[in-house]
Image (cartoon, rainbow over all chains, first blue to last red; front, side):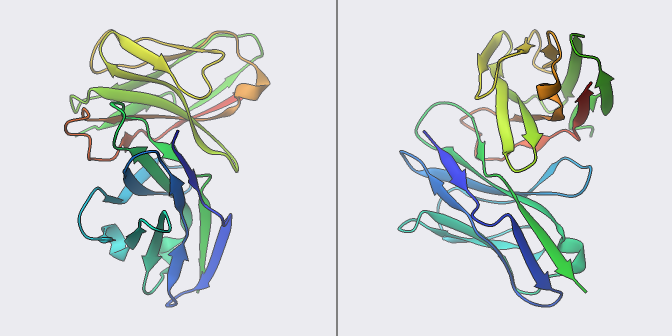
Length: 115
Length: 115
């Protein structure tokens, strides 16, 4: 079974400060990991993914995420947050081993960046 | 370049009514799925399909039916609507497992209210 936990319902930061959104996962094999962002009344948009290779993954809009296998984590980071980064963020995982395509999502973290 | 198209965007049903949520993709994706999004619960998988003629249940399939007669279309049917089915529904698609390193492409969602 695969699962994802996002331990923080909300993250509040000031514009210009670093932003971190936490994610931990559980899979029986090796993971494919994803981050998505959802703006109000919109669908989910792909931010970045970890498949294999470098543990630091760079994605859209200046976001990056660090894969840590020993801690089973995939935290999303941005060095300097913008007010426009305020949105709902989802972490998702897919186990590489089973021959299916299912993604499991976390409950989401609401990010608010204040001016 | 339509991507994943969901219709309708909004719907209000009375308890006991039936309806079909439409989902179509023009990317020749083999995999299609339906999720429901509820506050604090993230996205939960309802049904999915790995190709035309093949469907399977996800985490929360009760009260929903699907079919996949073509690669492009994956409609979700509510058999007898209940207030517990009030939610936002998302359709998502992706390439096959061999090319499945990509994330999903999401539709813009259908907001359903059952009264």
